Length: 248
Image (cartoon, rainbow, N blue to C red; front, side, top):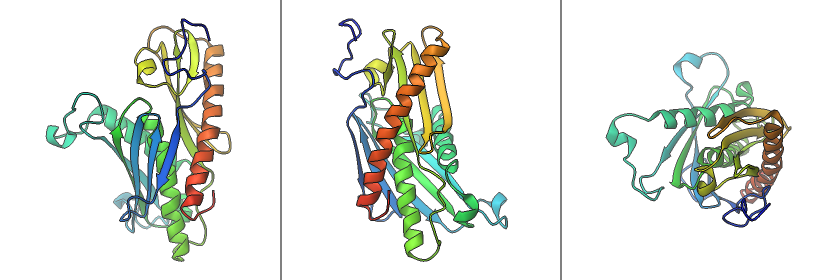
């Protein structure tokens, strides 16, 4: 990278921010993971509910859903709680649907049985990439909760087809970069979020031109960066699951 487009924190274009996933610090939850991704921190918990949504009753399969929220001082300026405002914002609804879709894509819902797992993702601190961190952390919380059901004999095996993680990419100062922090994300010409499985398949690609259109070659370069970053995130996930007594 040239001096003009040197990243603010000195990282290479293909480098992640520091990542840490801490498990087991929410003792009342069936599964939990606190993910620190750079300055972004998201608290992810998994709750096992023995009921499924009414429209699924009697179908012999389960459900995985998510709720997402940002604490008032997760950002430099205090934001109003959505409960006080009386409704969820469009961004919140979009993100929690994305988290739910991403986790359902890798779960055998019939193998889960007629029960629901609810993933709560609360942003403690936001510095870009909160939805991606929520997906990555929620997968860990989900696996820990499911492993608990296996240990209890409720399930015979993990009904998980493959792992899943997510990362942001961008074009900043004309250069495709991996895992932008807020300073880069807020000035990016192109902004993207990529959700990908351990099997190497895409679950979702959200890529938007913020400043100018981008070429197919630039998109391919961003996806290659995302794949590289997601592989590293999956190593962090595996290590966190192992630390909780499961297998990666």
